[in-house]
Amino acid sequence: MFDPQLFFSTLLTLFVILDPPGLLPVFLGLSRGMSAEARRASARNAAVVAFGIISVFAVFGRFILDYLHITIEALQVSGGLLLLLVAMQLLTGAGENETLESNTNIAIVPLGIPLLAGPGSIVAMMLAVESANGNVWGYVTVGLALVAAMLLVWVFLRYAGAIRQVLRDSGTVLLTRIAGMLLAAIAVQMLADGIIAFLRQI
Image (cartoon, rainbow, N blue to C red):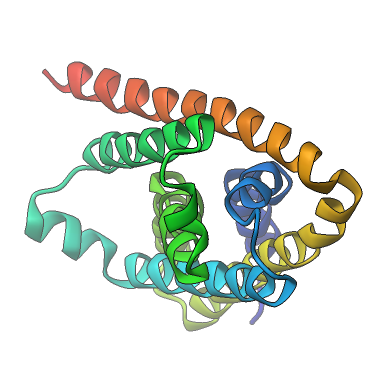
């Protein structure tokens, strides 16, 4: 039967890792200049992309990583490098026009992956699936927790436009630069964690 404890523990873990409130500054910075409709589409697409990627790794994660001889640490380092590139764009404004031309770009990178579907959320879902112990209802419970987490992400991003209206253009520019700085720190932390984990294996 449905396991409430497994559901809420998985949901809470995913919510903390995904950190929807913390995504708001980044999302506002990346979507600056977009229309309200494009911003809503980006929020929806980012949640859908992240859901799809995390679901695939939840089911086939171990097989994929083992087959390609990829470690979680390698995912951390690659994700950190990708985030660092995006952070530099936010800080300097380089490539801003190209990024804003298509809502699909930011929905896939960096929102969908690696901010949402990153090493942390992927590993968390893989562990949650293993904790289901082959029970069908356990798998259903974990799946529902993932759906609930993605809905929460969508709600936060969906109503980010209301926050932007309060901040106006000047406030959004300031928030973009702050988001770039924070994103750079997150990227460096991901790189450091991955490198330290590599060194411990030596």
